[in-house]
Amino acid sequence: MKTLDHWIDGKAVAGTSGAYGPVTDPATGAQTTRVALASAEEVDAAVAAARAAYATWGTSSLAARTSVLFRYRELLVAHREEIARLITAEHGKVHSDALGEVARGLEIVELACGITTQLKGELSTQVSNRVDVAAIRQPLGVVAGITPFNFPAMVPMWMFPLAIACGNTFVLKPSEKDPSAANLLASLAAEAGLPAGVLNVVHGDRAAVDRLLEHPDVAAVSFVGSTPVARHIHATASANGKRVQALGGAKNHMLVLPDADLDAAADAAVSAAYGSAGERCMAVSAVVAVGAAGDALVEKIRERAEKIRIGPGDDPASEMGPLITKAHRDKVASYVRGAAEQGCEVVLDGTGHTVDGYENGHWIGLSLLDKVPTGSDAYRDEIFGPVLCVLRAATYEDGVALINASPYGNGTAIFTRDGGAARRFQLEAEAGMVGINVPIPVPVGYHSFGGWKDSLFGDHHIYGNDGVHFYTRGKVVTTRWPDPADAPAGVDLGFPR
Ligand code: NAD
Image 1 (cartoon, rainbow, N blue to C red):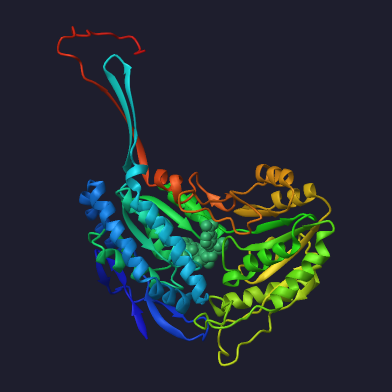
Image 2 (cartoon, protein in one colour):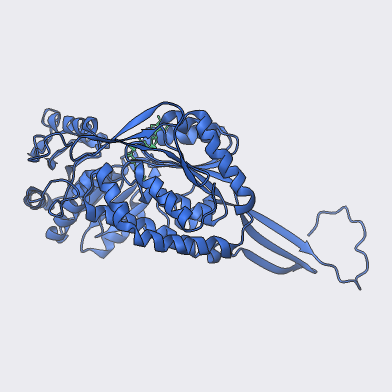
């Protein structure tokens, strides 16, 4: 069995706490790796390495930083198959999906390659006689990133490329469930010429996270994960005086109006609900069918869902892989098993699904629940599995009111041919990301990603301009260069105007 070490100060460092976590192949259920779980002292060592590296990286030239990032981009492209295979082996998602994850992470590396433009600052000349004002942005110091299991490469890449491009140094604490991709990302960065200590990976669980949240040398924390943990991270890191952005969970709704192209809407609903086995924070987990759209739409979704091929992620024939752990699989199944009792119509029940030759894998088939009451567990909770709830609404207004009553506000989408309704929806929907005939509206790298309400704690969305702002702090410099010929200004106790 492989042992996965930390990556500190430019090299692999064996864990010393004596604690290890299991990493399993979700398709076989077999443990393949044990990952070292850091003690507080090991976290301190990673922060110390990052702090030492900041002394030179924080003042390095933009040219030096971007030349590393350009080389890094090339190495990531060259190794994308390998990264994707690692993701599939530990997360379970199908290979094409894993490649897509790498591509979306690469977008942020490419954005970071152009940091020169983003950090240009502002200058106003002659604001008063011989007085100029410059606004600049400077790095924060050591930044920590804590990431979830569902995108073991992309979510870390939402964070560290921009953070280090801005001159910070970084300590990443990836999910302990699928931690290997993070080490590969860090070793490729070293190969690209990133100085030791600029990017560190420390593995662990809550103990490691809590040390990062209280460490006096950590200036800021980026977190992506579930809502209860996001709330804890935001409260604790803020109480410790750190800047924090904490992205949480979701229940993303797709509103389908009766005038929509129902075939396109059904294709989109199935892709967005069941892709990556529903383990996406932007998965569509609730379809709100308005008026006459309902029955036909449910039938079209059912027809499509029944054809999805489930199997190991490394089999090119598979369209959907297993869930991350057996415990998670059982929890997802419990929502489907309890659905009928809570008033849902169970159109498809995937809980009994098995895959020949992979009897111990964390399998579950696709489930479709119709006429789901808003008070049911299946609707209220983020299930994070291949379970799609369909709710019925009489009118557009009822549909929007239902969506806006959700405590989550990550993404939402409308499917319609009515431009007026779509325009209203983009203004009225209480969510951070809205799709119009686009089911998973994840913004491109040069826009920012983030939800509202219980889907994000903090002011900044992640990557894009918000990312640059999050990883820098502003400074305004007011300068006067008197002309030697000027008479001395003299003392003036008045308020400068
Ligand atoms: P999680 O909250 O269980 O774990 C996320 C990270 O926090 C991991 O690194 C984990 O080790 C750590 N952690 C877990 N419990 C902790 C605790 N009590 N104290 C401190 N740290 C703790 O999330 P997950 O199960 O890995 O990921 C799935 C969740 O992430 C879903 O809710 C999903 O919606 C969400 N997610 C959100 C986004 C987004 O952009 N909003 C993106 C991806 C995933």
